[in-house]
Amino acid sequence: MNGSALLLWLALLMPATVSHALSMTTPDDPAYENQPKHWNSSHAVTLNAAGSEIIGAFSNSNGLSFGTEPGGHITGSYTVPSVPAQTAYVFSNSNGVSWGTNGSTVTATVKTDYLTTAMASNRGSDFVQATAAFAGTSASGTINSTGISVSVGPYITTGALSGDTSKYVQNWKLTGNTSGTTSSAQGTDLWFSGGNSITVSGSSNSIVLSVGNYITTAMASNRASDFVAATAAFAGTNASGTINSTGISVSVAAPGGGAAASFFDNLFYVQGSTTLSVQGSTSHIAPFMLPYDISVSYLRLMVSASFPGTSTIATTNGATGSCSIASTIFAVVYVQNTGASSQSLKSTASGSVGFTQRWSLSANATAGSQWTLSKTMSFQNTTGATSFTTQSVASTSNVNLASDDLTVMTGMKAMEIPFATSLAAGNYWMMLGISSSSATGGSGTLTRLNMSISNIGVSQSGFALGHWGNNTNASVNIMPGLGSFTTNAIGTTASLGYSNISSSAGNNIPWWQFHRTT
Image 1 (tube, rainbow, N blue to C red):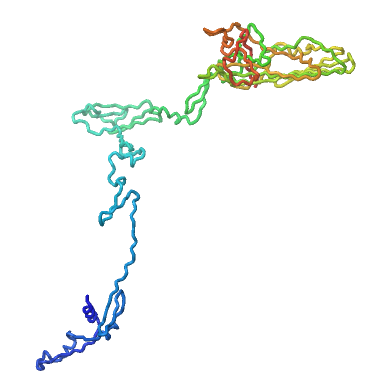
Image 2 (image 1 turned 45 degrees about the vertical axis):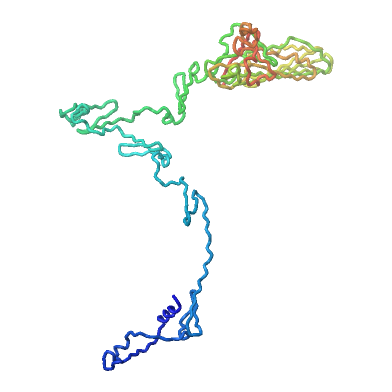
């Protein structure tokens, strides 16, 4: 609006005191008389006021400013407020949304990977991660990523044809039950009776069959663990075993009905015997077969023991001497390796026993006076470690090194080796060996008194074999693994091949037995 219009608008809003004036041009006309009814009537008013008279009603605010000019007019001005600087916003592309402009329009583009449309028909795997089962009335099934499978029981879901009476039985009867129907309507009568632990009952419109607590379906092939929770043992005539979730294990008893035998002889009879020495670094090995399981505590070797013939040594006054010979007899049982290693043997059980000889000589200070020769043998038998001691006393200038007083230690003897083990029936090999060491003091001649031990055995044909196209070879034995084996580690060889075993003259087989003492 212009300034005049503004002032007029402001004047109309200002309160004013107006006196009523009436021009009476026709005094005789009652309509124009100054009457009380005219006092509050609306009249046109003309206001002439100087600007200085009304300026106090104006105030400066909201950008408006008022004042007067010299002519008495009120002036007004409006100051446009300053607009603060606007923050510029920048759109960045992220999370699959990219921004752009199209003239005055801002555009946003969303990647097509984020679809909100309906699931494709073959995407059942998106919400069914595994097989889920469901059940309902007379039906059950599963649902998984491949689809839905529904199984319905063997129920008749359609009615019989109206004229087909051969497909069902119209009437049934219970044996001994007069409540069954006797109608001769279409179909045939069917009689039910109990038997084989089945009880039959019912009325004219139903049949009830009761079966006892019997298994009526076959066990799944992998469900043995359902009825065998742990290992169970069983026994029978000459046999025993166990059954568990992994299967059945049966052991056949040894002759005599026991679970394991306590005796075994590797030679059933010895008609002609021979002896073979296993002294030094050479051991002897021979195969044997166990026809049954054994559980034993010691091994008995059949040996022949002897001392050297009589010899003498001259003594001097106060002569002394001593000798100690310690021997260890080893026995090792081997089994055959399998597969590509079938031409070699590995140890499975072993035992050993010690045998010690001690000799001591002393003479008086006078020439030709009394001398004393003491002899002690320490060994082991079935009762444990023991020893035997004897002395020879004479008055002569020469010492007789005879062993006449040791007859209890010579001849055919049974040497016992502790051998607590259990072996199953099968093929085995026995290796025997002796390792000895000696110590002397004074006269070393006493080592002549060393007792020699030879194993008793049986001999066979002494020929050697060879393969076609090859010369006769001592390592080709007439029995696999029969012969001698030379090593410096007697009794400690864990494994050896057939090629390391050489046939011996006579192909001798040592004689031994397994026994149990407790």
